[in-house]
Length: 364
Length: 264
Ligand SMILES: Nc1ncnc2c1ncn2[C@@H]1O[C@H](COP(=O)(O)OP(=O)(O)OP(=O)(O)O)[C@@H](O)[C@H]1O
Ligand SMILES: [Mg+2]
Image (tube, rainbow over all chains, first blue to last red; front, side, top):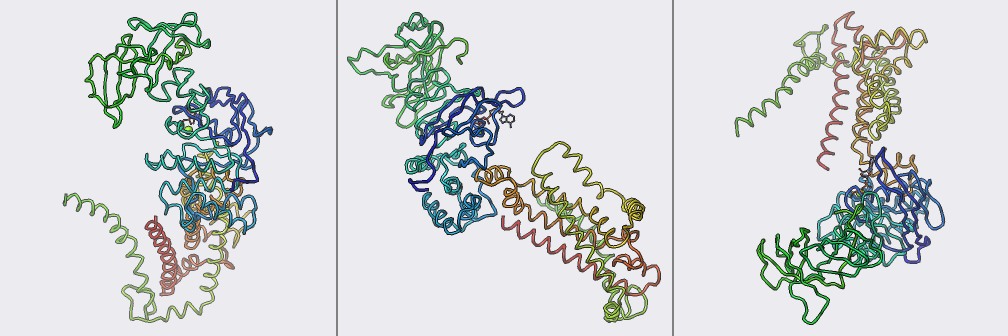
């Protein structure tokens, strides 16, 4: 429980892990390394294989192919109760017939820990989640947020080296979810534990993670820091899934992206993008209606307003570029929202454009 | 709105009224008859006395029969929960090949006419010399099993399967998941099943007539014999006592269920 916990955080490695249900492939051969002590989010749409991957790490599903390693140890065929992994479920899964204290004590009893040590550890765990006064209550006498905190305490009390959380905040309302995000983050900083956190909420993943693994259809689309997957998406899917973006279609030829007519825009691209159809993508911060004067990197782009919405400190605009692609961007709200149908000249930052291939294999 | 509510109330009251008029009242006439001071079983009874209760209390035949009935019923409770409990848990918690077939078989004794059961059992058990205590225990256990299986199965179906997953992830091997999580959560179903098993055996007469012999008789069998020989208030006393035990047990179940509902 304390930072000098006896079990040290371990790296987790998936090597060519595959899972099929009948003829359907839930997880395609997947390679992934989660560093010891890091906070990694699995992010992806429903059915993309996040839970299945997590279950192969916790031992509740056996991969059809490939291996799962904790450190140097191959645990592919170790049953779940011997993996020593803490798991937190979306619906809390507290045992209704036991008091909160008995719930937290459960993993210690299963490990034959001494009664006096158990009592101390339960107390510490309750203090860790700041609920020392609920020890004698039954789970149904707690609020949803409190139940989830007890579930976390129970999953941490036996000092697991690895904590898996499958949409742990999915059942909570938005505000509670945000404060719990901070609490979980703080816990991670205090404890020496590797956390793998499943979510389909990109803001949650961006706010909490050291690394984000973006899943799509049983495959990993991109692994990287929040800044990288948000600012430097490698595929159109990642760009779309991680938040508002604005894009124009075009063609890449010999390291230069040329936007389709009528947009007149040319961008130098990285070596990674091959010749063929492509898209240039911008995040909200690199699209504006009024570019700073004297900065030569802003290029004008004629658009049509499709819809607009006021969002407090920002205006949310859905814009169509001449060639037909639509995108959503936010801008400062210090000017009246233009009505749909209006022409609007925006400026995009050439330096912050991300060009990704849009040919076969890439999603439109 | 009011007429609708009235109709609804009538519809709800109707089955209760039918049960009371056709079942409870006719059964209840034995109660006043048991306090008769006369010589023969009649309604309305003549006078009031406890003489027939005293007669029963000092009659070896009745006491012996009551002891036999209780011994059979208790053994049936133990055996049917030991067999039906695990079966109900397996049926309620997991889907497996042959599950429906298994369930069908487990329920057969509940839908068989008692006469058919009795005759079949008599013929087979006699061959293995199973007439008497153990034969009756075996027969009643089979008859009680459907109730135990059904009640345990329905409470096992209410157990959230992720609780089992959670327990396993916290380090519990399968058998400990069963003992620590499943058993406490199906306790109510087991208790209800045990009580139904007790009642099934306690007042069962058709099979008991076949599977008992002159040296071993249960209460309902002695009652049956007495009714055919002579009609005195003895039978009414025993019927009243049987009825009282069964009602008390049922009242306990119902009240406990009500309280549990209120807690949740
Ligand atoms: N037990 C199962 N039997 C058959 N198919 C399954 C099973 N579990 C998952 N699948 C399939 O595998 C794919 C991946 O499912 P998975 O539960 O891993 O998705 P997920 O990314 O966790 O989605 P969500 O965000 O909705 O929880 C889905 O297409 C799903 O239908
Ligand atoms: Mg899932």
